[in-house]
Image 1: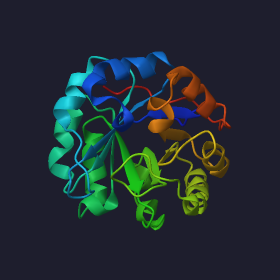
Image 2: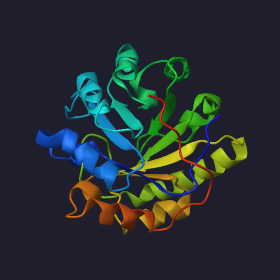
Image 3: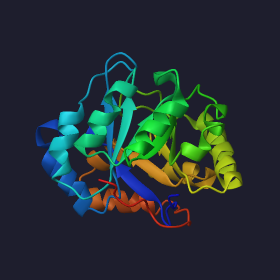
Image 4: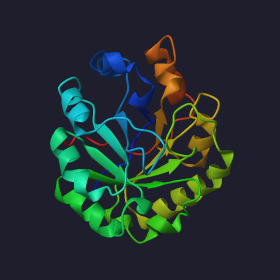
Length: 234
């Protein structure tokens, strides 16, 4: 069993970084106080964009000691999970829609010694995860439609976040509730009040002139006291 965070975790999304300087950008946010490095993997099929694969994760692993939080926006996901695990991913999150057997997918991720996450798109109901809570370390709520950074925050997802917070608390499991999409110092308090533990921020960090100041502002938006952050598994 993992333990949930004792402060708001901040996971800058590499999608918003300067792709010509990924190693430098990774080290910069770690030095600025980030907790995890979030990596959005897109295939141009499951979502309308293409980013990077296991080779980039492997190349970046030597640049940071932060847990590498890999979000697979690909279908099918199962054939690539071992490659991302071997590349150095610590957390691997998948969408219920990316394969026919979510339970088996989560079993595979955990069998590799990695933290397993389930990602809920705006139209995906909370019920998609309720029967796999025993295999889930992270639940990620998308507060935008996946595929591109810089989208506007969908306030309609706040009710979902609150429902998931209740579901997690009732389960007695230490599951990290993570939010991705349109996170800024203005929207962060809304999701934290609803029960979030971890904020994924792209342009709010990488688009800021001072990464440390941006991370501090997000964390100060309203930390959710709980336990301690996930340790690196890779």
